[in-house]
Amino acid sequence: MTYPRFCQEAIKQALADTPLIIVTGARQTGKSTLVSQFNRRSSFTFDDWSTFQAAKNNPEGFIQTLAKNPLPILLDEVQLVPEIFLPLKKRVDQHRQPGLFILTGSANLLNWEGLPDSLAGRTEYITLHPLSLSEIMNHQPTWIDQIFVYDFADLLNVFQKSLATAEHIERFLTRGGYPEPFKRDQASRRSAWHESYIKALLERDVRSLDTVENPFILRQLLTHLALTVGSTLNFTNLALKLQTSLPTVRKYFRLLGLLYLCHELKPWHRNLGKRIIKSPKIFLNDVGLVQYLVPSQDPSQRGVLMEQFVFNELQKQISWSQTKPELYFWRTSEGKEIDFVMEDKQGKVFALEVKAKSTLNASDFSHLKILQQNIPGQFLGGIVVYNGDKVLPFGTGLYGVPVTHLF
Image (cartoon, rainbow, N blue to C red):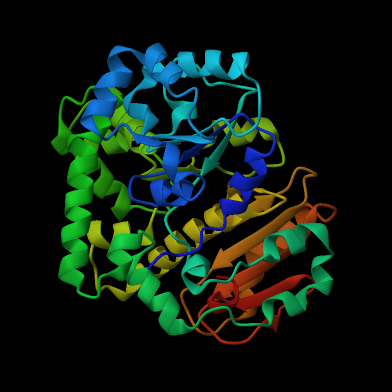
């Protein structure tokens, strides 16, 4: 089954005014399937050995041979042949017109030191995440844009409609958003897919980005990150627990980020400088991947999984939103914390707390109220996401909202 991808519209718009579009994201998120619909006749993948060898040994000649192909020309897994970026730059500069190329890559090319040229001013980068629950359900939520465009107090009706059921949420928490394991009903078959996937990434794909002296430590690091999702990053502690050097941990963590397997969530602070120096929180790119790496029936882990799920879904919804707010978390020096804070370009703030329970009380909103009082002119509103079935008011601009009404 093919699911709709809501970033498709962004690609269409970019093709109308940008010479080169680069779609990046983790392996097996559906990048090739997504871009193939724009031109199947001019599609080349560097996963194919002959195509790889041709481009690797004569990158300029390879790009020149594509000159008469119908546009846009699709080049898949470009991180395998970074040598083509300078010939691509030359080609775009010589024939400046929209929609020349669509590239895909399974690495974060903007953060990769091995990229010869970022193609700045010539390209638009679009990130494809694993499937969102809303893509699986085939409905596109717009509440993020509505909140930042309109007065939140007038948007209570936005959350009144249920978008999914508790069963849909539960199924997604177990399977995650990678298309292939999501389709598999048997847990053992999902596990087999995840094991092969991780093995291929950490033992093969990562080597196209940098040398890896100890793949075992790389795997252990990923597992430990899964154990501590939602926690702040401390490289020194990681090095001690993994019994390896601090430079190795820093390098391997960077590689996992380049493969889109893990993400840093930075702290929000009114002082922009303090956002930089404070430690980020860590999440993986998919709740199903977390479930595979650290399977647990412990009810206390439910809150962690819910926070991981909400983080991923917010990432995805922000990626196709019009306002594209930045996503942070908030923590005071006294340890008071809000799970997620979204801020738009005008400095307006909307905050979300995540509770893995079916009832709420006033204390669940205490930290949201502190933030509200600290930035009254910037605070648009806040919600506590929970497992109930009703939208409940808990003060001006503060609501309890069922998770089924957001995703």
